[in-house]
Image (cartoon, rainbow, N blue to C red; front, side, top):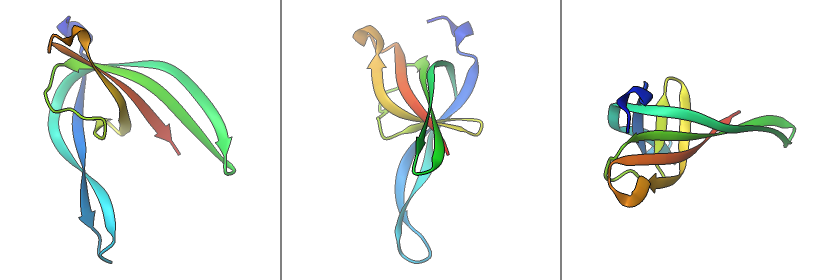
Length: 107
């Protein structure tokens, strides 16, 4: 893996169930790792209409050095962009590089 391709610093976050002021369950996001170097490559874009709203889905591949414990319910935060992990690929099963196939929804 060429370090020069990893030009974005991202945060890896996991969902944490909590209770709000009304004792209703809600999900908050907790940092697992910050300052992780990664590359972000958009794969395709798509817009569609649903329930009289315009939604956009942007699929991206995020590549980073291998990290044990990354799961599909985690998300990647880059600035104000939230990328939700759909699948995780351990390239060649060598524990050197992870490719995260992600979806970012804009509402």
